[in-house]
Image (cartoon, rainbow over all chains, first blue to last red):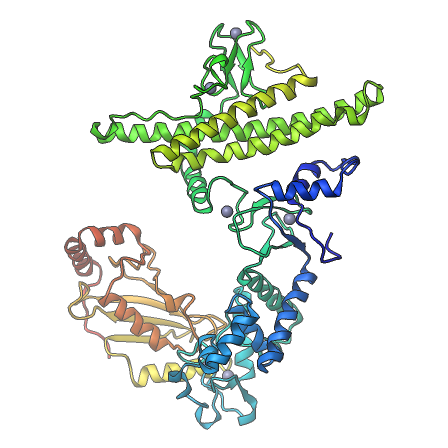
Length: 461
Length: 156
Ligand SMILES: [Zn+2]
Ligand SMILES: [Zn+2]
Ligand SMILES: [Zn+2]
Ligand SMILES: [Zn+2]
Ligand SMILES: [Zn+2]
Ligand SMILES: [Zn+2]
């Protein structure tokens, strides 16, 4: 996908189409123009590219060479300067014009004034190992600190083994001058150590580059490049990980990066309290028969008495999906400020569990609906082979299932957002829209499940 | 001393003997020149005053590229020193530099006894106590000093 510098930004479509490995019909009747228009309409549209390590190397080297030519420094120093200035060639050139000495000191290429006073070790003795040495056997960089090659070599080895590369400093007392790459590589001869040094350097450079992100997928080598650093959805086409470009966590709109971090930490901390919720079975609120939930839809129908109810709140489904849909809304105790500390703590836990339960339940539904999607695919193939309808006839079902997945995902992430929202009209409006989305999602889920597959709500016990 | 001992360690050891740090005695072990027996006198006007604390100091193979390993052997009530005697000191970790020496490390440990830093704790319960009720924490530190680090005439 990355041979050319073309537009790879079809992220939302990637997610919609590449869901299964055996999707040979994925591009069957796509129209490029329609696709383009959809992108502009999609508020979640985000432009990004997927890069290989070689692509990133090339990109960084182009910057290094441009800067090195522009201000006449070695490529190694240009790298140090770019790394400490978010890889903006223009910023470095501007700062260089304004005050080149300040730029070099600030970037730790040159020592600060204090440091320059300690020049050359006297008597040609390396002050680290205290071995007498020939004058030209001692070496070092701009700060004037001179040590023997063996000491430098050992210093670099120890540091690189600790994962340090771009932050490699001089050994001099209170000297924070950074070691440029050419100097390090002139000292380090062990090929494994050299590789490690360059690998860690590469990681540091990607991390300091505002347009680049490592794909957070396990062992995935892909680097994502986006022109703007926003909390937008990125999907890696190699490992299928879907994540937020800004923070690298799982994609989390409408919740913000800080909020989702808080929420996930809270969930991890409180996991034991919340464990009891993870039940797969509940009793029918009307006839009390035990019902196992094996579909994603939260609109349940008791197989025995045909009562329609909501899995979350066990309320009558008839009251759901209307203006009065209250299932997603937590009703706070209006008098809580006057209650005891104990009651307040209990209320806080109740509130958290309310949101956590819904968050968790939608995550589960998402998984169940994903399984259902596989069944739908198999079923459609069967139907097509059977000549009951053509592949195209059945496409609507797949499209619906994928739309459902996308909506359910967003719905799940509305709960952390709502949990941290201050009480007030903003929260009311948000919860109204959340309730509407929730009603429609369950509606769609119900229809998708019923369209072909009717064996849900299996009775057990 | 063995022929394999780096010149740097030999020089540092000689200097530690010739010009010892006031209040600190560091003697290399008879059988291992990289291992030092250290006595640190509790600094004046600190809760550790009047006590003598035993430490062990070991120079690893990579010294001076890696920091010395230092540990309190005497029990001490201090927010930056844990039950096992491990010390929370930046120059013993990421702030180590080959330009630093055994002498610098010992001086820093002495300074840490004069100025405990409960905001960067290693012993969390002690740090907590230090923040909640400093007067009481200092009192405990004094008692521990009396009990576990009774002063003996310092060999010099
Ligand atoms: Zn040397
Ligand atoms: Zn230096
Ligand atoms: Zn990936
Ligand atoms: Zn984010
Ligand atoms: Zn029933
Ligand atoms: Zn409900």
